[in-house]
Length: 286
Image (cartoon, rainbow, N blue to C red; front, side, top):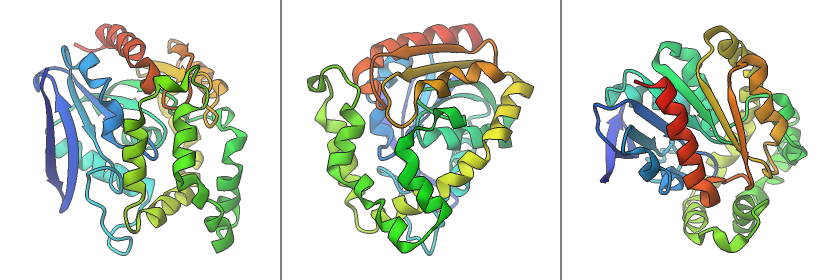
C-alpha cells in the first residue's frame, strides 16, 4: 500500500490531503475532528486501502491545509463544508462514502444535505447529530452560544491547552500507555500556530449552527435511508452512547457498535473499526 501526501488548490485555497488505494475503486472520504487533522487516520487508511480509494483532507484551519486569516475566510462550518464539497469535485469524486468523527460529522452531514446523491454510505465514529448525544461537557461552549461575550469566549481557551488534548485522547481508555503521543503532540503543534486559537474559538461559537441542523439531518436520513454504520467509543466524555443509539430511530437498519475506548477510538481500536468498516462497506459499495 502506498499513501500519497498531496496539496491541491481549491478555489484559491491550498488543501492538503492523504490518499491511498486504487482511484477507480469506490471512494471513502475520511473527515477528521477537533483538534486533529488527517494524521488521525494513519492507522485506519491501511485497513481500507486494499479495496477502496481512501481520501482524507485536512480541514481549513487544521493540519497542513492553508490557514487564511479570519478577515479573509470566515471560519464557519458552512464555509468549511463548501471547501470540502469543492475539494471532492476538484478530485473528481462523483460519489463516495463518508467517515465522520467529531467536527467531521457536521461537515459530512452538511455535504449529505447539499448533495444527497453523492453519498453512498455513512460511517459515524463518535460523530454526533442528536441532542441526546451531547454531554454536560458542552456546558461552557453552550454558555458562549447563548451569550457570545468576550468573557465567555475567553473561558473556552482552556479547551485549546495541551492538557485538554491529552484528556481527549486518554479519557475512557483502559490503559493510557496504548495511546501513542504522536497524534496529540502534532495536534498541539497545530493549535499553537499564531492565530489558530481565535479560529478554534470562532468554530466553537459556530457549532450552535450544527445543533440547529440536527432536525434537517435526521429528516435526510429518514427520507434517503443511507446505509449507516455507527461505531462509537463508549467512554467518550463529549458525545455519549445515547447519541449513537439514536441513529436507529431514523435509520432502523443502521448498524450500531461500541468499542471500549474514548473519543479518539482509532488510537486504540483502528483494527477493529477497520474490520467493521470493511464488512459494512462490502455490503453496500460496488
